[in-house]
Length: 131
Ligand SMILES: [Zn+2]
Image (cartoon, rainbow, N blue to C red; front, side, top):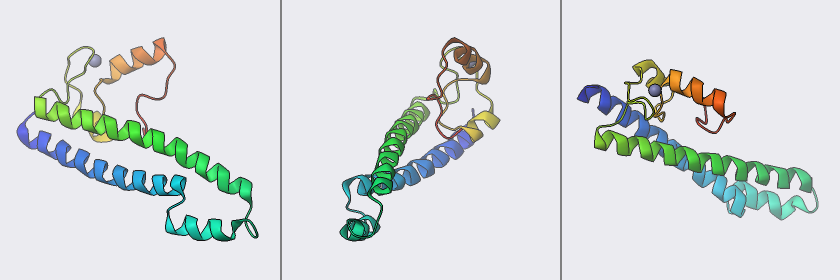
C-alpha cells in the first residue's frame, strides 16, 4: 500500500475514532445520569415517566458502550498497524486486504477468505461491529 492510500485510511480512522469517542461520552453520561436530558428526565421521572423504559435505555447504553470500547480499541490497533507499516495485511495469511474491504471496514485486520473460514469455525459476530 502506498503512502497516499495509507494516509487516507489514517485520516478515515482518526475521524471514526473522534466520533466514536463522542458517542462514548454521550453513552457514559447517560449511564452516569449526568447528561442534560437525562438529568431533567430523572428529576420528573418518579411522577411522570415510566421507570422501566428508563432502566432499559441505560442497559442499552451499557451495551453500546462496551461495543464502542471494543470499536475504539480496534481503531487504535489499526492506527498502530499504520505506524508499524503492517496495516492492510491479513494477520492470518499475510496477503494484502483489498482496498474496497478496508474502505468498508477500515478496522479490519483479516481478509475475506480468512474471515469466512474463521466464521465457519466459531460463530461469533464480535469481530467487526458496525459491518
Ligand atoms: Zn487472509
